[in-house]
Every structure is written in structure tokens, then in C-alpha cells.
Amino acid sequence: MSDMKLRKLRADDAPLMLEWMHDDSVTHDLQTDFASKTLDDALTFINNSLTDEENLNLAIVDDNDEYMGTVSLKHIHEGKAEFGITVRRCAMGKGYSSFGMEEILQYGFRNIKLNYVYWCVDPVNARALRFYDKHGYLRISHDEIAETVTRLGSYDSEEIKQYVWYITTDNNGKTMHE
Picture 1 (cartoon, rainbow, N blue to C red):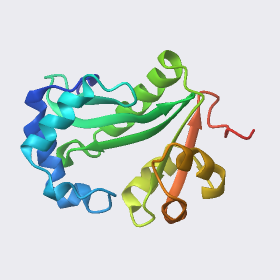
Picture 2: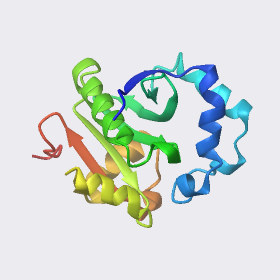
Picture 3: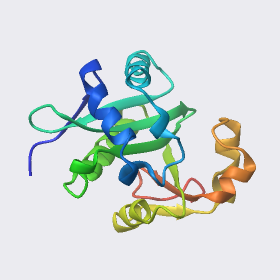
Picture 4: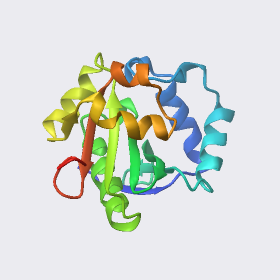
């Protein structure tokens, strides 16, 4: 397996970012309409990520510094953040998702002093559900996360009920209620 690292996004990542955005095998179970995104949209996202203080978006790259995907901590506020990740099809099954997730979570707990990180998955996204369950992440009920995500404005109460929710802490997966 090649060496992997996280780094800031760069403008030259935009064409490879657009590649996964237009790859239905990558995006078909995601919440956003990525197929309509343009190279300018990818460049705007990258440029905004360089100064955004509420969201941390980093590139997952291989040992040749080639962009393989984006990993994010979003809506960072009051010791909480929402996790997100997407990798190119050529990076799937090669450890990039595991690496990116582990690294950004460690960074969030260690450097940003997060108390917990949450995320949601569409129940039809079997690939993502298998990944998170295989790696032992804790599923929680939408009732347990509802107050946090509605207060942050990232989801409304009906949307919350549509997804499978996960949470992790730096205490090996104990929920915020334990």
C-alpha cells in the first residue's frame, strides 16, 4: 500500500475532485447533487476551504501527492463537528477512506478539542453503512442527535429521521450521553 497523507486542498485538485463528483458509482447514494457541479464549483469550494473557520476540508493524497478524495469536519461548533468523506473510485478499497477518517478524527480531538463527531448515512448507501459498521463506529438514534443538528442548522427534523446516524468520541465510541 502506498503512503497516504492529508494536506490542504489545492487548485490543481479540482479536476480530480470533479471526477468523483461526476462518477455516479461514487455519488449515487449521497445527499448532494454533485453531477451538476462544474470545475468552477470545485475551485470555489477549494478556495473557500482555505479560509473557512467553521469547516475543515482536507485532501487525502497518495505518496505522489495525487488527490484521492476529500475528508471534512463540518459545522465545527461548541466541541462538536460533522464528519464527511468522499474518495475517487480508484481509491476505494485501498485504505484511503480508513486513513482519512482516522487522521481527521484524531486531528479534531487532539487539535480542535472536539468532544464528539457525528455523521449520517442514507439507509440505501449500503457501502457506507458496511464501512462504518465494519470499523466499529457507534450508531445512535436520530432522537439522540436531533437537538445538536437542528441547532446547528444542518438538518431539519424530518431530514434527521431519514438517515442512519453515527457518533464517535476520543473515548472509543462512548456516546455523548454516557
